[in-house]
Length: 492
Image (cartoon, rainbow, N blue to C red; front, side, top):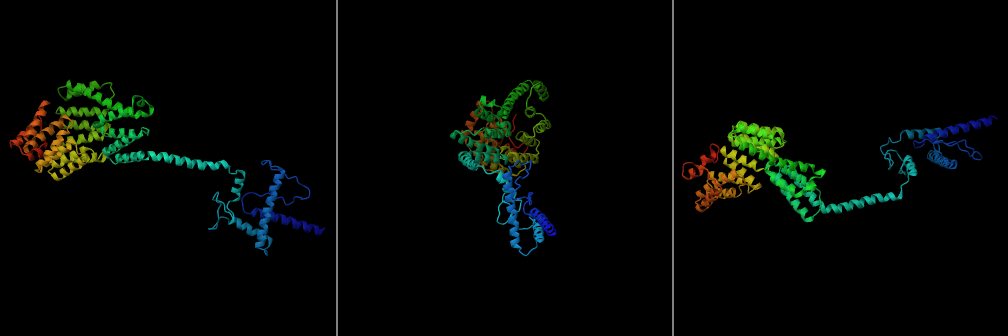
């Protein structure tokens, strides 16, 4: 009887040690192992109510677990044949505690977190997940289909890529302050799209509208034609073209405001009367405030108002619309010229250059400021730089001709004065260029050319500035004319 108790006690101790060993095996899942199962009779295995597994299936899985445990025990016993059972259990426990602490630990290729044996690829957790969620064969088609779509999209994109690439380049020019070059680049894009007859949407068109708007009122005429060409009546009404409609309305508002200005100016004898008439006509009407102050400045200028009044109106433009740099910076430079503040002229020209380095006004006011400061070399450089950007600009050709006269280069002055005259696009620039062209023609002895100029100008009911004849008669020197006072022809 004592012998049986001793044997029973040993079996119980062995069972407990086996359970402890199982707990120390690799893996974090709990292993359920009943070492007291009677292999000859009791096949009723209690089910976990949360799993709902079939008893036979559960038994099969338990047997697999037993085999796994046995295999691990056999492996440890083979590696340590002389070790005590408790030492083996202890080593297994320590091994589990030190998992992942080694520098060369091999991790599961699926989760990248759990450690696996050298001859394994996946950890038990990932293997279990794969078993319950096997890979579906048709999912192989997903990456293949994705690759096919990418190839198809690239083949289509290759056709359109030059246009998109050139659009990016044009936008870079605009951001760099080279607005004229940006528009020239877009003109090339427009021509390419017209030839290919492809639909690239209208975003690239809106970019061009934004650039033209930045150029200010000088670009309104071209901008209006651009909108009419690319946005028909039906297109303009679409909800996504709201910004284009607003730009169109802005241009039309400017044109209507000119009519209001003309009526107020015609009904006024001085600036005070003009302001009263102008403001009365603007009541209950919604016009762009920057444009309103521009016309007030313009009225102050042509009605001979004090420079302080002109400057006040221009500062108002800057206040209500800080982005209208193409409008108020040239005006501030012009006011500084009239006030003989040449350093201020250079300051405003530099500010304008940061916004639009290709604006002719940048080089115009630099040339005038340097010339009136007696720095003909820098004045000449400013003219040359501006003419490289736009060789046909009447204002820059005019200034270049003046600088050439001051440098005693009459032949070159005549050539630039001719271009200024032929390219004049406003009444003021035409009259000034005509007077300069006549002066240069007479200094060069080109009598027939001078007579042709006189005849053409007289047809419009105009005449030359008095200084032309004064220089020819020797009453006024070219140096005094172009370096003293306002440094230019005077009228009236």
